Image 1 (cartoon, rainbow, N blue to C red):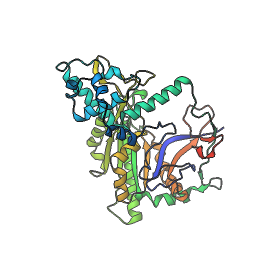
Image 2 (cartoon, rainbow, N blue to C red):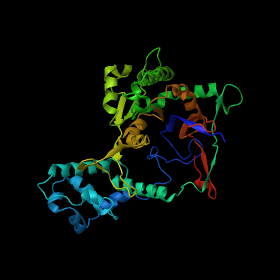
Image 3 (cartoon, rainbow, N blue to C red):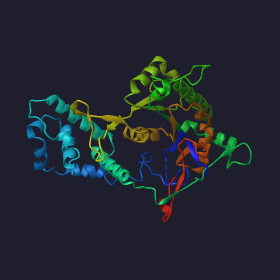
Image 4 (cartoon, one colour):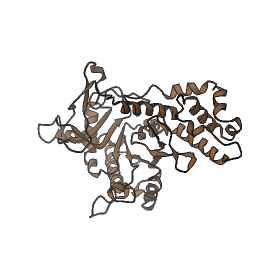
Length: 392
């Protein structure tokens, strides 16, 4: 079986309707950019808010934390701690809130913990409760050896291929011509939350050199490419003021260095405000199979946190209001790029053409995967009994 290997490129339509790149259903606006897992637990933001709107059982909270200690926390810290206690049905989180010393001892630590709980609560869709509930489901499935895809069969997905002869599903030059016509309606989003540690590099991957001839960094190559697309789009539209925005998603590890790289190089020629940065939030680390929150070593008033996945970018764009702003500006497509894949930009324009020609809401670039190759793959999962549940 030859599957398709994803190469870190994605096009998403801002006016999504119902069918995705391989004929799979996708969410429609305003949640067009929200990632939805087929294994998502039932706890959602709305239900969490509903629970929080109800009065908490005072005795339950008071048994765990005294009123004097609770009063030390800010309003948001109190609310998050109360919610954690109320939803801790099996006591998995009791090490976080139980056995607090009396007021007057470690008060600053208690306040810091309350604020951290509130921050974690606000950063995850549905709050910390949804995060922990989801983790428990996934950890239990793993412990029980359950396979959530046991009712599916893996098949080679249908896709589009471009060529200069008659073998492809669409002529390359035709796709390229169509893609050029919509570049001015696009925005770019660069996912760049990782360091270069695995490559023996101490800096951010965006500052790595793409080659030894020009010594251009990945970020410089991406910015220059977008500027070239912008020049082309201005000629196509006759609008000399047209700008193609760039959003960079950073993490706590890469944010300062990314900003410094841009500052040191005057944004590589982009105008002020053309580049926007959104920082990815970290999520709570877990210490056991019951999804117990992990405390920092030697500090009972601090939770361990870890970087989350690249999928956070969709939530961040929506949360920061960028999607709504782009729609108001008439933008129609978001082009997602991985931080270190300079060659993929050569296929952006024809891929855009395919997306427009086929009316795709979402489209990924892939290359054929060789059998046994150590690379992720895109495959179609055909449900054995219910075709409506099939997905890619």
